[in-house]
Length: 302
Image (cartoon, rainbow, N blue to C red; front, side):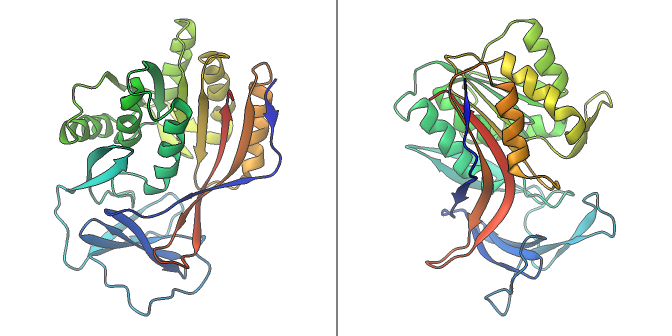
């Protein structure tokens, strides 16, 4: 049976040519996205910024509610339709479009970069033609999907038609439109349940669910209520020959140990290891501080 590692792990991302966490503090973070820089809210940045001035192209000003409302305030505004960025995925480059969204994000989640690296390690960097099959639930704009596509088929699922359309555009921008990817607009939980009934199997699954969301037909997603059932269905899509499941959770009052405990129960009949901990991004510079961004839990067959 899978064994739970009780001590939390830290999975840290660092900047690259087209992204970096420049500074943070006083409940905000200052980041570079290619030639543009932005300020966004970050409640976990409790310390004092190191820089005296943040010269940004835009700042997201949160609303008075707790549901992510707010607006962008621009100085020298970036292109409304977005601008291209790259992420180095081993010996290939993933290209995609960054864009200021109404939800304070910029079209991808840079703190997921070490997760994408880790998934590639589970498949083996040399395994370009191994034919692994991966499932990306809540796939958003598809950067993780494109990272996985070098290892075989990927099923990309998101409830937002706009996000899936952007993911397909990113695939075209990256020169990966011919990769074996199924692009599906659907409620993630409903799709996973149907895949169980179809007796489908995957080699790896990545889950990046929101705290709250709605499916394309108005389905309501509440993380604390619906996550256990979704994880249980995902377990049925994996077997002893599968490689991993990786779960990330943002903006909840929950310990990573709770996620680890859930996986420990659901994966009790499979061999392997269950780990949990924090995702963090390191500020640019030799003594950059670590900014926590999310909690995670993961199962690996090894």
